Image (cartoon, rainbow, N blue to C red; front, side, top):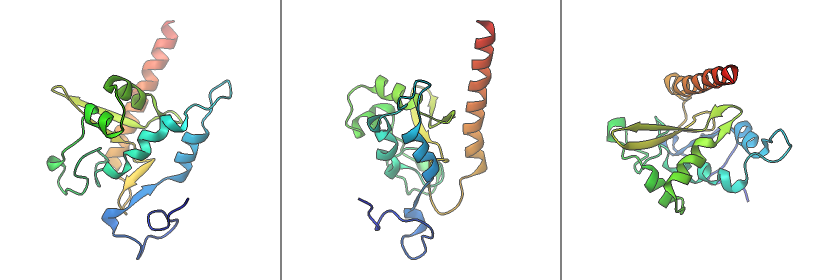
Amino acid sequence: MWNVAYNFYGSSTGKAKPIQLVRTYIHQVRYLYEARTKEGKRRYSPIALYPIFALVPYLHRSSNIICKNPDVLHIEDIEYFNITEITALLDLTHSKKTSSALSSLSLNGQTVFVKVESRNEVYLKLNPRIFWRGADVPDYKMIAEFDMIDNNHKKRKLIMSSVN
């Protein structure tokens, strides 16, 4: 059931504070639910899409990093969830399967989650073209980061197909 306290179309004026908002791009969400394989089968089950929606409350408001303190102002103060913590948060049991499942999600060829790794630390960012926390449009640099990853993935795929 549609809960008007949390979900609404159009203007948010008078309905919520801008820092409480999560912008949902309906066409992209619909695409994820309706995406089909070449054989005509659903690409993703509702269970496969569950993590996207379950992690929305944990989106940092200016970076889309999945974190414990989504309202913190400065990015350097973010306490991000690692894959093990995300697995527990989603009430799942296998971190490797969770990581693989999240990495395999794509929106019409676009990456849904970016996994950032450094010094054995890993955190996730959600594509701002699907959900974006806040009243302003997503930062161009963040969108460009997702585009860069997708462009490189396409180039590598093309190179691999030409080699074989």
